[in-house]
Amino acid sequence: MTQAPAAPGAADRRAPPRVVAHVDMDAFFVAVERMEDPSLLGKPVIVGGSTGQRGVVAAASYEARKFGVRSAMPMAQARRLCPGAVYLQADHAKYVAASERVMEVLGSFSPVLEIVSVDEAYLDLTGTERLLGPPFAAAGRIRAALLDETACSASIGLASNRLMSKVASELAKPAGILHILPGQEARILAPLPVEALPGVGKMTGARLRGMGVRTVGDLARMPLDLLEAHFKSWGADLHRKARGEDDAALEPESRPKSLGRETTFAEDIGDRAHLEATLVRLAEQAAARARRQGLSARGVTLKIRYADFTTYTRAAPLDPPSTLDKEIIEAALRLLERALNDLARGRRVRLLGVYLTGLGASGLQPSLLPEEGRLREARLVESIDAVRARFGYGSLLTRRAIGRLGKEED
Image (cartoon, rainbow, N blue to C red; front, side, top):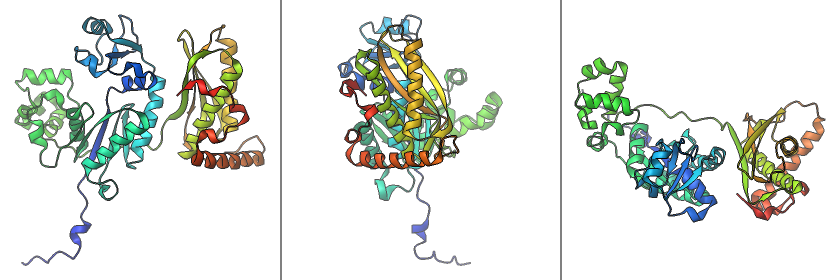
């Protein structure tokens, strides 16, 4: 039987090879701290949930890692290994805000973005070659955009599936790009320790080593039935992983859970008018960001840190959900008034932030307020957004946002 020739152009209609990128920010918490304080550049820096002896290392700069310091290490051990490091208290709200900027950049390169953590995400770059260039060139553009927009570097792994892209980014660290071509998965994996496989932790690694399995190549040579006998259903997963096989699809989040803005003052602030003006500016920027993403908020959260580093968060609902500056600002100012009246106890303010929560699809919801007034407010913010999009935020400042704003550091 003679096979019919392929129709003209059939090759062009074949699905393009799958390309998955894994983007892993390099020492992200440290990078964010260095954005605020450039004097930390080049120094060993260790960030922890607590900087005391009982704390745990959350992140360590590569300078500190040369001394053997690693994430999840007891802080007391880190201090013994690297006594000359700069030790900083972790500020997770600050890292979340920086992460949102990172994910915005990544989302501009692919509509399929799976956020894994504050400093890690997968992108599906399949079919983007005409727009972004070959995969390696696309990864270079992503890294450059992250540096330009966030001043943070990233390591990027490229492969035909998410498992191998994760392995590739780890091999590329720090600040590198590695593309594992289809068909090369098993060869790349074979010499690596079994713990290099995503999902193989210390306990599984110890069990495998007890069976004489030290490298991924050793694992690949293990019979499937033997792995299933020792690891049940997980044995089949190990069997596939050792060969670099993974058909899992990316699971993009439809929308962020929260977004916001915060600022750390160059000098601690006690002037209430200055604090209110700053809060208005932050609320306006957060609201504009939500509108750009087609979102409205069900709640507002105030973050305030006093000069002694005591930090509080206070939240208020928005009913109905809103994306309007006026409604968000008024809720935020009420929270600030309570924080200054009930919590300040004479202390100056070091940091101020506004976060919008309960995000959902935008659109004016029914309200007890006159609907005509809300529609007028919506048209006003549209006009303001258009001006600021063209000329920058500072081109149009509302009366409430005018203050001694030049002293803040974002």
